[in-house]
Length: 154
Image (tube, rainbow, N blue to C red; front, top):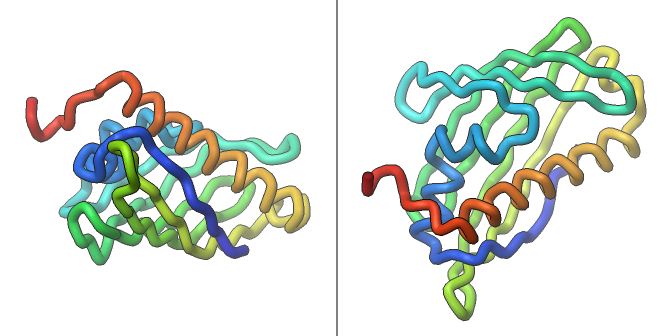
């Protein structure tokens, strides 16, 4: 399944970059994320509690950030499994400064699912993926509107 989208966040690129790459902020924004534990440079063990069309499960896996170009772009790679199936894929994030202290974020990636989760059908999974990404960016926007200070500055 392809993942594509464009979102606008009400903050400068430096702040949005922090929200999209710092594990504490990511954990706050990723729907169902119960934990991100560092296991190396830009690699984290993740625990996600997710469900689609009545099929719910706790996924454990690895989240890695690759090809980082600070303030501009990076790739997020995800590999996870649960008793009900697996999820793996990647998403390229590209940031662009817009007018009035806003940042555009473009997504382009691919997601593969298997097991019981895959049985619910492509259309339902695609809808659930779009909804989850939308919730993620609502979380990022909430951080931006709260004026959350980049954690590296604290």
